[in-house]
Amino acid sequence: MSLQPLPQTTDNRRYLRQHGAKLIALLFWLALLGGYGWYTQANNLTVADTVRQLAAALTGSAAGPVIYIVLYIARPLIFFPATVMTVLSGFLFGPIGILYTIIGSNSSALLAFFVGSYFGQGVLEGADESAGLLNRYAQRLRENSFETVLLMRLLFLPYDLVHYVAGFLRIDWKAFILATAVGSIPGTVSIVLLGTSFGTLEEMLNGRITVNPWALATSILLIVGSIALSRYLKRKEPTHE
Image (cartoon, rainbow, N blue to C red; front, side, top):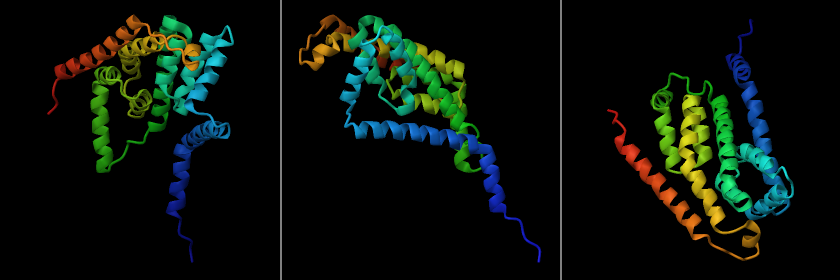
């Protein structure tokens, strides 16, 4: 009696050959997230505690701005809130923190985009109906990459979600980074100024709150203006039948 081949085993081997590197990368990513979660749990660290540790590391070295930029670039890998990092730059560096944050946020956006692109490669290729619908949606995003990402940036949608989804759907990376660089300026400036408007981090932690009304007003105006601009651009978009 001849033995029949095992198609399931063959399919498994083919799948591992095609996606083995992605599985290893995903396991590494999960281990990184798990390690960060374990560290915070083991040391009973809250987000505020983490911010204090970051502040101490950044202010205790002349290379603080460089360390800040590096940490900002790596931030999306552990889903540390971008808003916290951006506000922190205002507390620690003042208005010059805008420059550091723009460098860090755009670099982290590109990192998250390429991570999403790597894991999304080949995922949407399929003949079933759901894959077809996703491919059509992805194609529409690719055809309007700059406008779509710009609107999402101006609307202050979650940064990491936008970056990973844009990469996963494999939109044009040049349009992505240009739209991110342009669209994130109002939000970055407004959030850094928001941090600057309440004095230094040390004053905040010691309960001494001093408000800079001009910085606070400018921050609010930029947020409102960004949302208003996004609505205007949305209305100017051509409708798709």
